[in-house]
Image 1 (cartoon, helix red, strand yellow):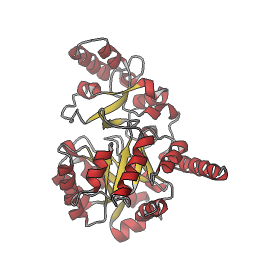
Image 2 (spheres, one colour):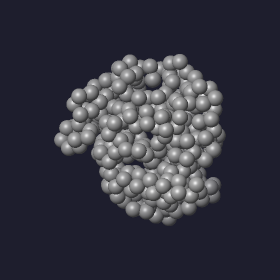
Image 3 (tube, rainbow, N blue to C red):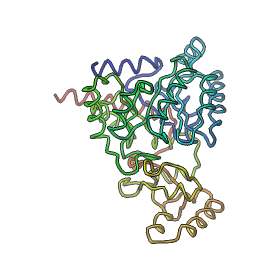
Image 4 (cartoon, helix red, strand yellow):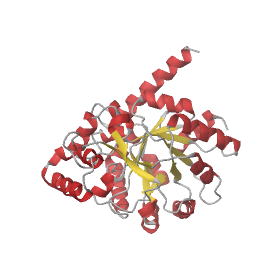
Length: 366
């Protein structure tokens, strides 16, 4: 299947979208119903991220349905009213997720897409979740699987039970939780996966590129690599609709030189009291601040945690600051490209327009 047919098939499943397909990633807690709705209304595909508890997703989907009922655009309402499908996506973190509550939520409020990530037991978990969710959504929801290596892509594509409808190819540039040590950059990962899947007669699976993309230049590059769409996370942290503290946004806006000033580590997970991640597989990328600096200087973890907790309790927005901040500020290496807080719809439209201009210019050069 040609690249254009794959892209058209992906956009065709989400009829309200406009090419190039721009997606807001399901960032835990921070990607809520308001952000998902705004992205989809702008012709993209917005995802709600996992909540604090597994059953939080039912609350978020209920809120999303209410928002669509109140203010959904004319382009989106027919999908909801005629087909019973919410024109947004939902993300599930498998290692600590609950399939029973997930099935209950998506059966009641059918999202157009379901993004699966971080299985504890590899393909076995993916197979179980994929089968269970497809059963209750009756094929109305496409299953998206986030992967970070060629090995994961081949295993998923070859599964008879958990073959995904879409593969989200996450490069090491990404913020949040990505491959701990064995990932690669999008520049090599996307084309290699695309080539190998075609060789294995699985070239019909669309690839969505994620990691370090913050504007139309990144979108255009991803499309040239063979992606059918792009997912952006860090850029949408600085959207008006994100569920995020001002101090976090300020730290993202202040940051630059992401290759030097971000690091992939579980330190901030542990300081916040989050344990249980399969740490040999996934670790989050975060902006470096005082906690990391003192950690590298050999300060004891218990001392770091005490200072962290005090900062979160007393420092307000300064708890995220680059200089004296101590808490987690997850962001990708493209953080230096994020320079303003804007409506999510504007972020989508600006990236789309910039991509179109770049591709037209490139076409005129050949």
